[in-house]
Image 1 (cartoon, helix red, strand yellow):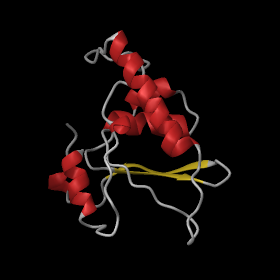
Image 2 (cartoon, rainbow, N blue to C red):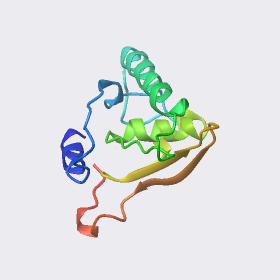
Image 3 (tube, helix red, strand yellow):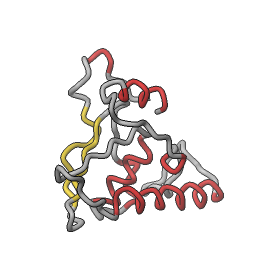
Length: 138
């Protein structure tokens, strides 16, 4: 994610890039149905789940005040587990369904959060900005 963020930041030279360990990859919660291959420990689930939920509360749950031009735009460059979990939580879906969602690497997910707190999903893992030979999953 760090390498991708550095690439993305070149397209927004006037925007300061900030790294926040709260949005690092992790185990947000056990998925339902359970994964056949991914088995995080109870300690990972507790530690990561608390951190990822706190990051959601910080960045998504409470709409930020609009800037002088009106709406604000926040760009997060992070791993898929966090994106899929936030997506479910923002839409008030069962968060344990996060692993059922598959997203491509460097996909764009767009959640619109109104000042009243209403959330609309505009895109999930969209890769229309990439040529087909650059689309990857793992």
